[in-house]
Length: 238
Length: 248
Image (tube, rainbow over all chains, first blue to last red; front, side, top):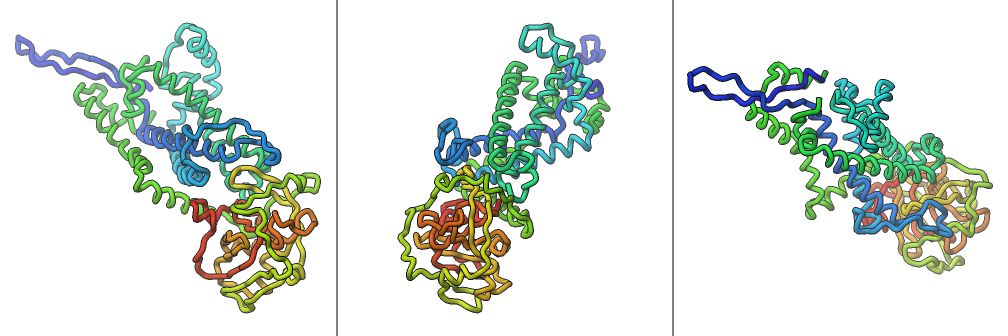
């Protein structure tokens, strides 16, 4: 990571004696997020928003995971927090944005793999010892472990998990959409009926991540947020 | 570590002004994200979503494998008949007069005309336990019996180059099918459920039963069947905005 650090300098004018003064280093900055990652992040954020919103509207048509007769509703999701207005409209949104959602996922994963950037985010066995100190720091006011890179072990764990959940959301969704053509995948999930439950559960797991993610973004301030827009993080903690 | 960075790293010092400019440039590169905002513009939204749905239908047709069978189930896995839902878009029973009922066949067929239920029942009878999935999200496993639509199409001498089947129903419902699905071996002209004659509310005397399609494609109380090369009438729910292909 160290080679992507720069020093931001403020050039000084000539001093009274005519000598050029040495430039002053005012900040450091590190290039954390390649363009493809940023692009995929924001397009996927929009797509995820639409997928969840329209998915909840689709769920409203039969808000149950049991039998149709007799029907026992699980929860009545308010229409105001759903996209599409009605089942047919929500399906249009869902079946349109799923392609954008899948495209960003495939493009992102391909980029990470071929560029080697996956090393920044992939949670491996080497990150395991670092998880507990981070949990202690975040949740139990423990001391802050030294920061060594863009992502700490807990972040890597969270991001790796949510990328896995993203893949699962697509696979379970494919089975709900095409339980016959993907009958072997459906079989692995326990059939169409259970695939629909998995698809719903995966959505909540992703939303749980998003909630934590947004809290962390707020806690970590402006420079951290800007890095997902420009790629550069000013005054990194490492 | 990242190739992208190496270029920038040649100069490890950057002037403050240049850093800000660079940041703005990087931000501008994300402008394509704003293109998604087109979906928020009311005048564009409908057309874009229609294109998205159309793309999904196109992909659905590509994904459909004519030789791939829908899973079938044991009798023990059947949903009890009493718990098999009845869904109609208008009435549950359009009061078909069975005595005078015929299926009117027209279009690209060599033997058009009115076909009786007996003629359909004279074709080899198929019984299958398959899953019926409603677009709303519920699913049931039912036992269906009937003639293969492909056998019936042979009986009426359907043009093998035809591309669509359109049906009309006694309750004014209408639907259409791609020919690949129509000739799929599990696509039935269904006249019995659970080894009993089809009841009025389930679509008597004849309905479509298609384990590779969503529920609303499986029209009940059939009265007309047309074989055609072009699609002039799509389907009742499709005209409200639902997917046309909706293959499972």
